[in-house]
Amino acid sequence: MKLSRRNLLAAGTAAAAVSAAPAYAAPGPGHGSARKLRTGFERLAADGYALLDGQRVGVVTNPTGITRDVRHIVDVMHADDRVDLIAVFGPEHGFRGTAQAGGSEGRYDDPATGLPVYDTYLKSGQPLAGIFTASGVDTVVFDIQDAGARFYTYIWTMYDCMEAARLAGKRFVVLDRPNPVTGRAALGPVLHKEFATFVGRQPISQAHGMTVAELARLFNHEFLTSPVPLETVRMSGWRRSDFYDASGLPWVPPSPNMPTPETALVYSGTCLFEGTNLSEGRGTTRPFELLGAEGIDGRWAAAANELGLAGVRFREAYFTPTFSKFQGKTVGGVQLHVHDREAFDPVRTGIGLLISAKRVWSGFAWRADNWIDKLTGSTLVRTLIDSGAGVDEVVGAWQDELREFRRMRREYLLYR
Image 1 (cartoon, rainbow, N blue to C red):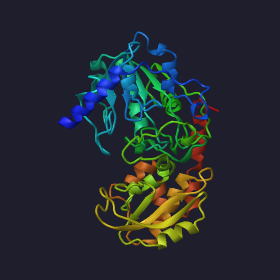
Image 2 (spheres, rainbow, N blue to C red):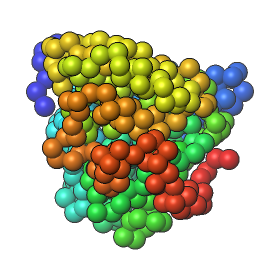
Image 3 (cartoon, rainbow, N blue to C red):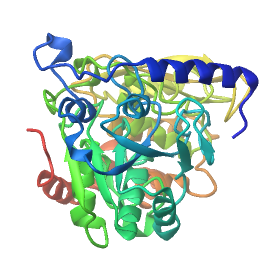
Image 4 (cartoon, rainbow, N blue to C red):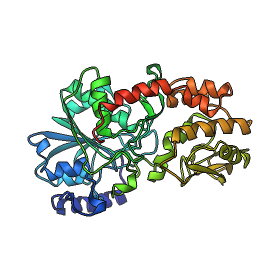
C-alpha cells in the first residue's frame, strides 16, 4: 500500500501518541451505567494479559478493535511490554479501514507501530495457514465488531482464520463484543451447504443472534474439520436483550457502508436488495435504509405500509447515489423508519419489501448471477417470490430449518 506524505505525517503523529501512551487501564464494573459492560479486550487487559503470557501474538482486527476511549487495541498492546505483539492480520476493508467493499490493504508495515500487516481477505485453508506460520505467531487473537447477519463477512474471516490456525498449529483467542442488534433470537432462512460462499460458509440463519465468541464456539464444534485450540474472553454486563446503545461503547463503522447501529438493525433484511437491480442505498448517507431505482414512485411505500409489518413504517423517498448502482442518477423508492425496534423483524421486513417492489414496479429483476440465492442461502426465497407467494408463505417455508438451527445454537450461548 502506498502512503502519501500527508498520511506518513499523520502516521508519525499517531506513532508518537502510541509511544507516549500509558498502559491501558480497563474500566471497572462500578463506573456507572455506561460502564457496566466490559468487552473481551477490557477484561483481557484488566487481567494483565495473562492469557497471552509467553506467547508471540498476532491480531486479526479492523478499525472497530478499539477501547472505549477510542484507542485501537493494536496501538494499546504494542505500547505495553506485557504483550509480545508481532503481527496484525487485516480483513476486507483492511486493518486501518482504507479500502471499500470488495477490497483490502495488501501486505505492508503499519506506519504507526512498525508492525507487519498481512492481508487475510479471500484467503483460507493452507494459504492462510502459511501466512500465520510465516508471521511467527503462536496465538492468533480476533477482535472485530460484527453486525449480526450471516452475510456480514467478518464472521467468515474468523471462521477461515480458525481453520487456518488449526492447520498451522496455532492457538486462537476471540475477544467478545456485543451483537449490536441483540442476541434474542435467530431469524431467517438457514444456508444450504451447496450455496456456501464468503457471504455464508456454513448453515447458520440469516440473522444469527449470537456474539462472535458464541459463533466461534459453534464453528469449532460443529463445522471445523477438527477443533482448533480455542479460548474466548467473554464480556461482562451484556444481556441478550441489549441493543448497541445500552453498551456505552462508541460505534465505529465496521465497514464503510455500516455507518450507524441503525444500519445494522435493518441490514440482515435489506441487504437482500444486493441481489436485485434496485439500489440498496450504497452511495448515500443511509445505506440499507434507503432503497430504490429509476421508475419507482410513491406506490411502493404505500404497498409496503399496507403489509402491516411490525415496528416499521416506509416513507416515499428520492435520492442520488454517489457510487454503486444508479451513480449520479436520481431514483425513487422508500426509506425505512423503525419506530419499535423490539417488535421489528428485519428479515420478514426484507421479504415484504422484495415482494411489494416486485408487485408495483415492472422493472424489478434479480441479479443475473442469482446473488439472491447466495444471500438467502438457497433458491427458496427467489422461487417462492417469483411464484407469487406472500410474506407469510415465504417466511413459513424456512421455519423447520430455523428451529433446528436454534436448537443447535442454544448449546453455545455464553449469555442468558
